[in-house]
Amino acid sequence: MAKRILTLNQISVRGLERLPRERYEIASEFTNPDAILLRSHKLGAADIADSVLAIARAGAGTNNIPVDACTQRGIPVFNSPGANANAVKELVAAGLLLGSRGIIDGVDYVAGLRGISDAAALNQALEANKKRFKGNELQGKTLGVVGLGAIGSLVADMALTLGMDVIGYDPALSVDAAWRLSSQVRKADTLSMVFARSDYVTLHLPALESTRGLVSAELLQAMPADSCLLNFARQEIVDEDALLAALERGGLRKYIADFPSPALIGRKDVILMPHIGASTDEAEDNCAIMAADQLRDFLENGNIRNAVNFPTLQLERAGTCRLAITNSNVPRILGSVLAILAELDINVVDMLNKSRDELAYNLIDIDRAPTADSLAKMQALDGVINVRHIA
Ligand SMILES: NC(=O)c1ccc[n+]([C@@H]2O[C@H](COP(=O)([O-])OP(=O)(O)OC[C@H]3O[C@@H](n4cnc5c(N)ncnc54)[C@H](O)[C@@H]3O)[C@@H](O)[C@H]2O)c1
Ligand SMILES: O=C(O)CC[C@@H](O)C(=O)O
Image 1 (cartoon, rainbow, N blue to C red):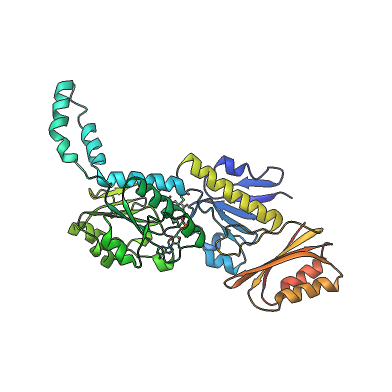
Image 2: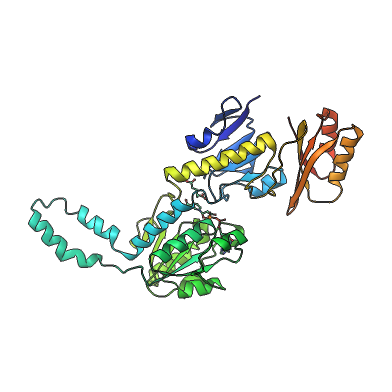
């Protein structure tokens, strides 16, 4: 029977094409979907039907998904790391230029000259007024990058090519990310060091409970006069009251962000975009393709790539069929599962078991299909969260 994929945002066709119609039904409404594919849709735990086996986010941030509730229910949440990083990097480049030059005010000024029909008079007005839109160059200024993952590392490279000094902070930098990072990026040991030493600070870290309000009054106060803050990460990372106070005080010259809020719209010292960091054809295709491929590999083979709450685990298919079992990360569960198979004289052809935090996940290839009764016995074992028989 075809698997049902519920889409909760518009997903690029190139991604949906990775889920062939003879095996997958895709719709924006389903009562009992097998999986959910979404972008920024805010998903509540109660919105996830019992039938859902997996959730795939075509994008990086998963703060719109109740990941802890999914973990407890044994539902992997996939994302598409790096797939939209270039799109965000390019918009940050635009953000830096918008913060350093009088582009928006200058363009607005020119738009207001529509009534002048005489070219000489127009030119005279332009030349007389252009001093109002003077800016500064980025070359030689310092950019502080907070979060040096897929986006932050590209932003750091881009800023270096513009002749900026780059200082970076990331207390949880992965080994892969560290390899990607240019040796010209200076390492800051503390967040306050980044804010105190940068003319521009750009945020590229996830929204987590631990990063909510991370950009505090204290950090904003430490910024040099005339500095700019760029936020293409998430709104909740910046304490909005502290931000407004810093703007009012004049310490912070501009806030450039992808996340409008009622208190920020309309201010001359704030430039807001409608969450378009990843809105390019290329990024939307890349994210959707990655998310759909990962979802399909999980549904058809139980393999896990780029889940934010499950261990990474891939096993070539062997044997007649496969069991995918999620359980609490405690001893003896796997032994009990194997004992049930042994009782039925079912041979294990290959298997792989990995854990992540409180979860363990197992792929077990066997030479014969288990009975419904034995599957029910496995499911009933203390600590087993779910058991899937994949033909
Ligand atoms: N504006 C947009 O449309 C858009 C698009 C893509 C991503 N994003 C946001 O950007 C975030 C980063 O995306 P990414 O692809 O670079 O993710 P990533 O996982 O590759 O990198 C995030 C980095 O942040 C670091 N980090 C975590 N906590 C930190 C902290 N307290 N201080 C400093 N660094 C910390 C991590 O160690 C990691 O290296 C996403 O989580 C998402 O919220 C926004
Ligand atoms: O889907 C989008 O347009 C935004 C995605 C972005 O916020 C992300 O976290 O990847």
